[in-house]
Image 1 (cartoon, rainbow, N blue to C red):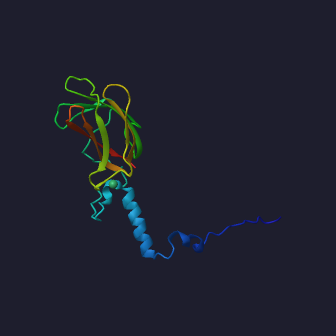
Image 2: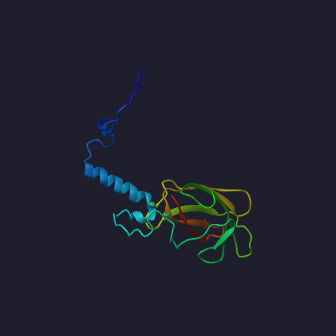
Image 3: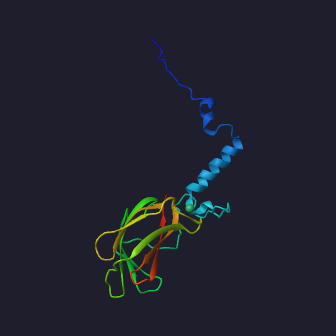
Length: 185
Ligand SMILES: [Cu+2]
């Protein structure tokens, strides 16, 4: 009987050395810790390096988050002045997720009519971390009165995001609406 021959390709330390170059073992551990902190989103502290106490371990980053809105198709938010309303017709994906999102929304006046001739900007921001998205979303009119579509809304990390939708109206006023969502990683 011929003993089986096992060809084992040994992936030794030298083959992995390139990953971290000459970084020390401690350096690697710090890097690993940083990656873990990054992965935990809201618990990762802000860009100044401050850290906060983790209260929910390996649960989702949105566990216990009390701010913001729970998404539902057709949800409405008032403008800062209260004179206009934004209705989020549809978010895709729904509910909003980490990564790229596309939203369709309608802005109506106090009579319920869609506003025309408005210039709309959409600005995502992570208030806890003091940063926005890598790229601004793209906003276009759909052709229905007061209806807009914002694509490439980039929630680039898990955690709580606030999206400010500002509308420079044909009347010269500017109205803004704020939607808050926590997105899981
Ligand atoms: Cu962030």
